[in-house]
Length: 334
Image 1: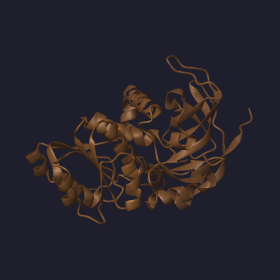
Image 2: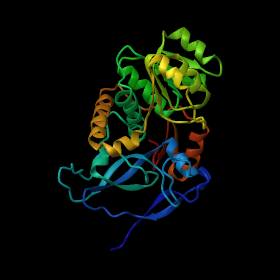
Image 3: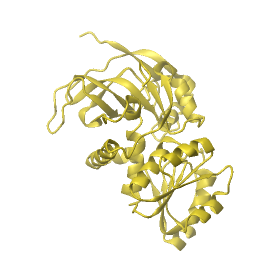
Image 4: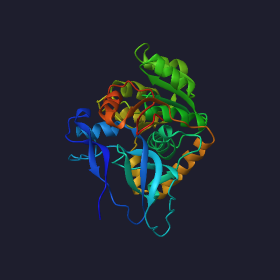
């Protein structure tokens, strides 16, 4: 059998974006319960950047192809497995995968594939699932967010923070978005935030005290000093969601603050939760895709790069120049 070749952005060393170069790689074979997807767009996530630096929880040895989510068209389908949903050739889909998305094509299991919402472009489809599922797992599964509660989103202008703002509003919460750029915060405000706070222009604690009677849930992808400030504002029974450390600084919390407010610090690891509870993951994704189809959730894509510029896409994300999401496209700009 002759194995074909396709182009992919390969991490060749753990030196960050500069080590990601486009190369010809061998096609994977389609086997039982898998499909081949011609990738139209691939979402760029912060873990992709961390993987390229060897700083993610999962440390891989090069070479490997980053890319956790894609959108495209099914071009080949393998034999079905019991209980699986086969995908017909030509179906527009989105898919989640730990690796391999920065490529012209990818082979993925049936159960990692979902129909592309008819209201989404390929670029939007490729940037929806990872961020939206992280927000859902944090706010719904871990925090049990209720309507009328107050949510503060730290790092609200990034992809996951933006998704958290949208979802919290859909769930009926009052949302305060915190970021460092007025233009980016304006986009988050348009997405549904009730209030925005620029921490470079105003004191976060004083601003939040003036806007709320107490914070029920803090959604934190930043860590660092912002975490230390926001935890002081938790209301009785408040929940602090540890989602990530984009600042590069891992905070520590004084246990007496948790005791006095009967509050909780809750870890959020959406990817691992999905692997440990596949049925729960599929329920979450079904809910999110329904909300997307209803026009209630939609990613904001501020930057697009062709596959040959995958390194620049990762660098742009790392330099915090993105509002919402950045995407890699194959062929036409989508």
